[in-house]
Amino acid sequence: VVSTYNSILSTDPLITKPVAAIESLISLLSASPPSTISETLSLLASATSELKKSVPNSIAPSAGTDLFQRYLICTLQQGSAQHAKNKGNKDSSSDGDFRAIRAHLLANGRLFVQRAKESRGLIAKVARKFVRDGCTVLTCGRSRVVAAVLSAAAEDGAKFRVVYAHDSNDALSKSSTDIVTELRRKDVPVATIPFAALAASLPHVTFALAGAESVVENGGIISGMGTNQMGILAKSVGKPFYVVAESHKFVRVYPLSGDDLPLRQKVLDFWTQSGEQEKEHEEGKRNAEDEAVDFTPPNLITALVTESGVQTPSAVSEELIKIWY
Image (cartoon, rainbow, N blue to C red; front, side, top):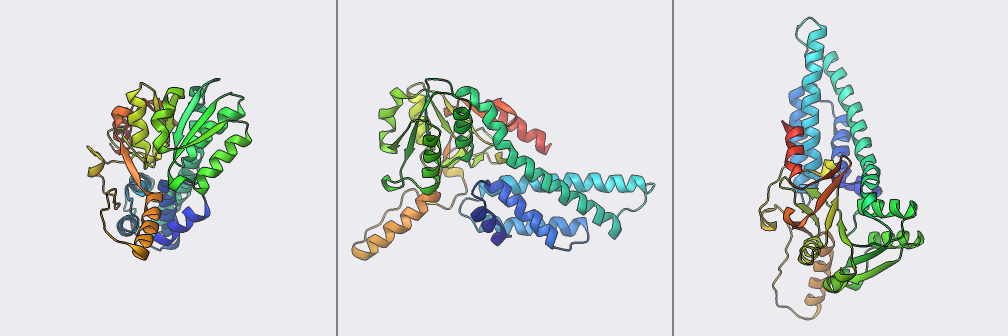
């Protein structure tokens, strides 16, 4: 399941980590021959645990694996009840019944993945109204949802500008470069600035816009390193800070601060070295920073935009209650 997950992410740059995790589990079920509901749930539990241990940020794939397991349990329960009803409430645990339930599950699982992928376009339609003529949007990171929103606005003829903050040692990453290039190709003026210039750019900004790897239960977000900094600065000068994210990124985690998150990353790395060791250390640190994330608390977020519409951060817990209870 780990190799499948990594392969999906590397071959499809547009896919999100939760959806990649779901596709990995569906692939596992398709290739595995469990014959009972208990064996199926046990297989998924062990595969999910293995997947979470293999990545430094397990929260993002957890949003997908938890949602899929909840969906699976509901589907199996409904399928078993239906088969029992069709047989006059007799035992429904035969091989034929389970194979039918399993086939139904896999078919609906793939449909779920397809709808999750389409949610990005729906968000772009909802968030498009925030991007108006004459506005200047501040953003950062490599969010594909943010790119979809800004591209949709440009294609609708909106006249706006974008300020793109980055670090990566004064150079944009490939995915960030692709976003900037695509916007400029659509006649959207884009200014790229280092994070050190964020405060200086804010007087010229209308609002800040960011994506998220995960949306936690209290309405805060886990996103690329620097997002929290952008939120703090935007709030300090009264600029709205909007977050666009698919609802399948909602995850049952309730951190009080970034230190409460189960992330295997070092923000502060104290050391004393020199020469070649210093060079090797800096290269390793640079690679780690590319995947580093931070936590932006809900009090900094003006609104969340999902495929369901515009929500306040406090609405996330209500959505999770609907899904799980």
